[in-house]
Length: 300
Ligand code: MN
Ligand code: MN
Image (cartoon, rainbow, N blue to C red; front, side):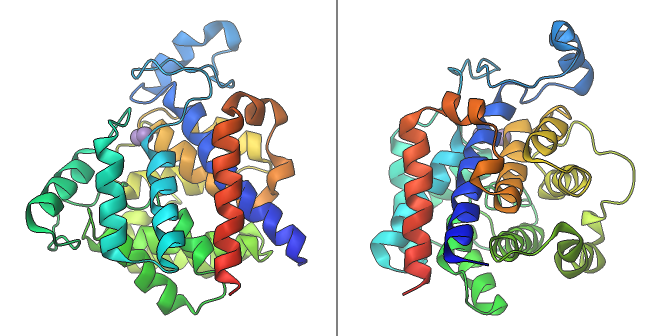
């Protein structure tokens, strides 16, 4: 694996995250039946980055999944490492900027950080939402090359600012390690054995071999199951993304996470050019540029 190829996969992961977020947001909180009906004239499938949705987004506009990742990534670059307090301050500043959407657990966690100054929430069985997993990409890129336990520790540091929960930790860690494996050239069958099946063996909540997960909620296991089914069951970036967002539910987040994995798998060139165009130059530059700087940090 050449350095250039690794960089293309890292950039692809970040651009894929944004593309999946923008594509999925159109159908967030819709059921598959509602999507089939709304897109009847497109053959019953949502396939283009047209904006709209409950947030009334512009075509190509991204949501919290992408903008929280970018905020976290900037804090990592400023500190030279994943630092809990710096991450909490970055998320707090992000929230003050009136983002288009914000998860309940994220809001609650950041309000508590403002009150206490403590960047680590206490353990909660209710924090098993997907909010920490959806923003894990900059940690994965910044810790590329480090041993798995060090990666996991860095993942938890950022996650616990808002979510302190074993299932959230397990999902975020597994996804970060999968991105790293993919950037290093691993194949999906290898990831299935090395990461996805072991996750489901330790936490049966993540068992993804059953029936198709439709209308996935914000529960992190719902998200991961939908993403794994789409990612391991498809052979291209576009197929993976269309497959996952048409399941509806928390579709911007399943789209973002599936886009991160598929972008790392197929590289920047695997992302349809029309989707990258619609994303717009500022978001493209922010994502691709941050991916490069995080990889440079990992190489120091
Ligand atoms: Mn979102
Ligand atoms: Mn969402």
